Length: 122
Image (tube, rainbow, N blue to C red; front, side):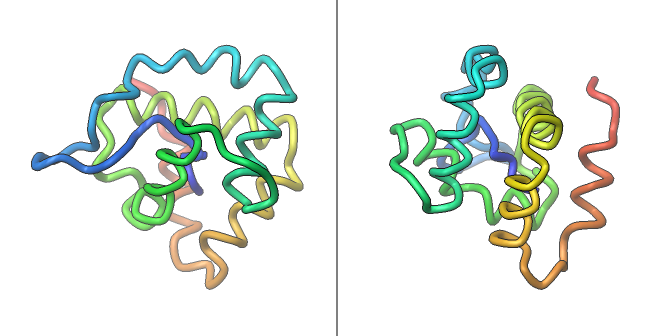
């Protein structure tokens, strides 16, 4: 639900309908292919470890992105977020559960965010 959003490759909102495109070309392959890096980002999002500058930026937008099912994400950002979250779910389902509970403890946004994750990438 984060987008680890987490997920994520979006940053500070700009005066438009989308998040800042600064990370639109962020190479997620090292993140999703290297378990050590994936765990490091996850720990950052859970406040269990240090954050890289990029992870700090991503972490800032997790709550809003979760609430709106990435409503301010460009199509590219949505694709990146879904890819990262799917990697976390596949490799570390317990960590995903922790992230979901941290950022949506009241379970207000889970259903709509899960639908967002299930949507086909365009």
